[in-house]
Amino acid sequence: MRDEIATTEKYRAEFEDKLRVLLKNIGEVQIGKVGQFPYGWRRSAKGRTVWRILEELVSQNLEAQAEAIGLQEFAPADSEVGVYDFSFRLGKSETIFVNIKSSVVGRSTSKDDISKAEKLIAFLKSISQPTLFIATVEIEFLVDPLRIELRNCYVVPTIWLPDIYVNPSNNGNVQSAKYKDLSAAVRRSRVEFIELLEDRVAGARQKRMKKLDA
Figure (tube, rainbow, N blue to C red):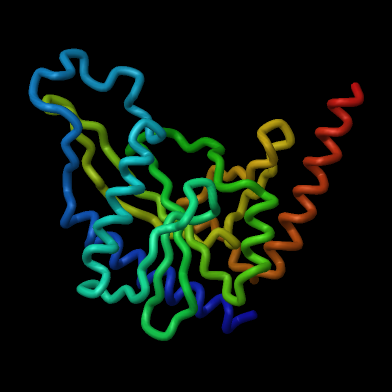
């Protein structure tokens, strides 16, 4: 297990460094021209407002610069509803899978959806290495012109999430409030995480059945 955790950390740190350089090079992303949004972002100043654009932006730039920054076999995900957004290899690594999230600078943390629990379990059972990462891009909303600035990023292995919750009322989504907090991560193995998540799924299923029977 020590080797597995050490390998996971090695590739996590390496990819985080590369992603930070990429985001710094991208800088600001303009959404509108001066005067087009006279009242600014209003209620749309939320991570989910720009999440899909952000996902495509990061994925395309990584793909375009893959060779230059040392990523091999880069490939966007085949589906938009899977557990990852793109994959690649680093040197002699197994395939590494990444799920992109967004976070707004200065906002308080809350539980956010990570993935469908059943899909996540099936996926982790299908791979030999626990290299599924959550890459959270921290953004700031700017105005006149309307734009976002890519401020920072945090890469955390999905199997290290410390606060795993399966929502019984939300199609069995895995939720976490600490998906960008590496200091709180629990350095566990893939097998340990699968066992824990299966237990959470069973608990959520029982809660849902009790609610339906009430």
